[in-house]
Length: 161
Image: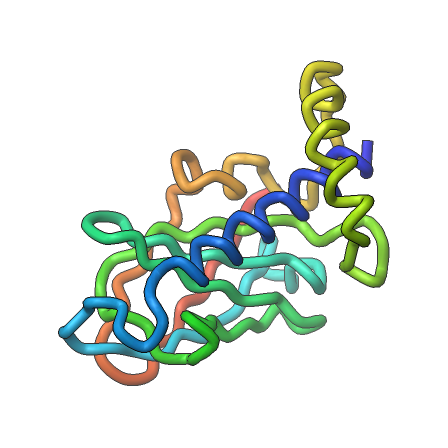
């Protein structure tokens, strides 16, 4: 059960990295204000598990995405193209549970195998136990939105199990 979740999370991280790299280097085409985002992810008031990923994806227009990792206190800071400054627009947020293993990394062979194994795991309808509702892990169902404003921003999210 944990393997399917680990594979899904690893795939999401790889896809997010591809999106982040593809959004344009220093010239992403965005000419408006920018802001920095940090905050806290909790589950019923308690810190979310360390290693959860939080992803902000632009709600409309060009695809701008930022990624952060939750620490032991539930806190995170977003990075966009390797920097803290991201376009000041409205984003949909998703939260991905941490990997099952403590290292949080996979070898190239494991990643290659994971794509094939993930399809098998999804078809098997195995439902891994998540620390929060699975809906938070999809931009289509998370219900989490945040509008970044110029300068520092604090975006806290309290999830339900």
